[in-house]
Length: 197
Image (cartoon, rainbow, N blue to C red; front, side, top):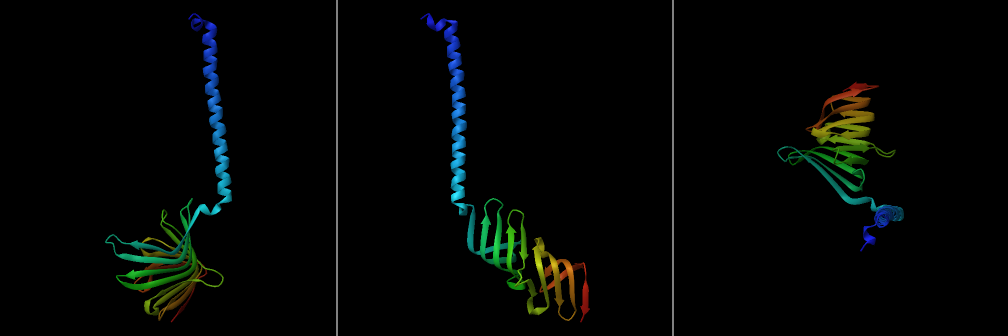
């Protein structure tokens, strides 16, 4: 047919194709906006879907030979799905020497992140973060305790350290290592006072 070969037909066909493409793009954008609004509405109506609560939360660190270095237990752990932070309550961290507990840290609350491999324990007005060695050889009380790799720690917010038979020391900040039933490599800074026994 001669009508399919005319310039007017080709122009109308080209405009129809372009119009269809523009129409499809507009429809896709409108559909995406509608679905995004529906999803936002669902999240607003169901905010609990972002966090997961775990009872009897447990976290462990092992050395290269697969021996247990420490085990953290908490009454509850609330996992934030966006940041992977876990908010903990009623925490106990036991540092091990083989099957034997050499040091125990107790805290009312804290936070951990498995990606960043950090554990931060914090005090409340009613209870401080307390670390005690076996047989009472040493103890530490503080407001905030950050646990690092290889049994190292950083204590801030006021620190009271008692090493039975050696000294009682207070300061603003302390770093060191949890060793066999005592504290090692201690560095205490800021407003430091000591009583030698």
